Amino acid sequence: GGDFDNDGDVDYVVGNLGLNSDYKAGPGAPVQLYSGYFDNNRSWDAILCNYNLDEDDVHRSFPAHFRNDLIGHMASIQKIFPDFESYATASIHDILATDQLDSARILSAHTLQSAYIENLGDGGFVMHPLSIEAQISPIHGMLVRDVNNDGDLDVICTANFYGADVRTGRYDASRGMCLIGNGEGAFRVAQPAETGFFNIGDSRALIGIEVEDKSIVIAASNKGGATSYILNNGDPKSTYIPKLTESSATLVFHNGVRRKHEFYYGSGYLSQSSRAWRIPLNATVQSSKDNE
Image (tube, rainbow, N blue to C red):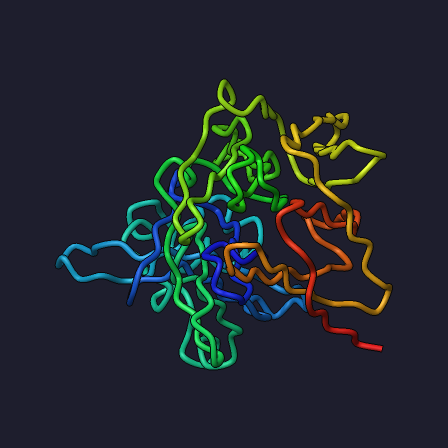
């Protein structure tokens, strides 16, 4: 979270699967997971479905699994659909009986895009998808910093995912990315040659710590090592150390701009960054929220 449009409240950037996959989701055609005791063997079954056109050009929800893969979880599929042709045209409503559909737990994803969620105030939010460059791989860890020292907040991201099933394969298109903010809620994706942030592999955790006068970013990958980066802090900055019970504070710049900042316990994908806050010398902390 960060006040990316400098209007005094906290907005959010959220990571998602992205658009570089076999799965497509949209209004009225979500990716869905049907789960329940479908095979009467006390084993919880799950069927992932995606909407596609059927033979009559009607959008229906079809299983994403190959027939043999689904038989491995539900042996009854082999009897219901004795050949590949019959299975190929079967929607989820053909696979599950009415009582199974009624008792199923159904989870739906209506968008797979990573997005910027703008805080409109008074409990209102609006979602803006990030640019297509930010949709090439699943985003995991995120860290809000002013990467290019222009006074506006940016977002450092780790991405990729190697834990998908064999049919899907690895999601490994990302080299790490920096979303450079313009102070009005819009972002552009900066390339590693511009920022120096190059992070490949099955990347996960991302944290920031303050060591003396240095801001250090540490990125960790699954079954791999950790890589550290030193941020160029630009002009001198002071360090604000919040109290243990302090949850947020407001930064007031000399030009009158007010920026809200939240102090988290846990962030960056199952991680914890330092709660210390580097603030420009042309700004002061004027108000804070204490949850004591």
